[in-house]
Length: 79
Image (cartoon, rainbow, N blue to C red; front, side, top):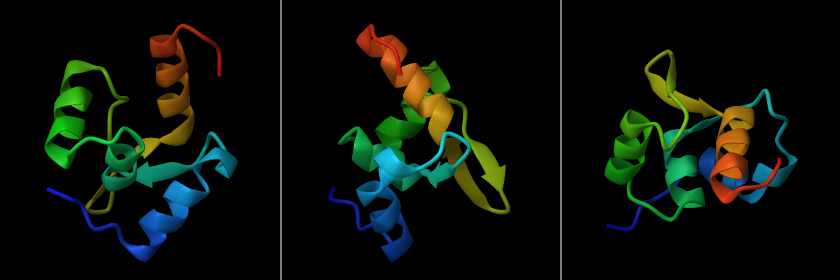
């Protein structure tokens, strides 16, 4: 099912490469980056293929730096 991103999530997705490693993004942004569903994103978090999500209030977020580091390691390169 296609996911509808909020305005803030759309901005985070467009500017992802410019975000600092200390930034956090919501799970829909991570799912969109990987072209996967939210359910698959959560499965990948659980299996360790995506970094552990943290809660800020009621919102689950993933750290941008951890995401980049994990993706680089999975691709066999450096950040």
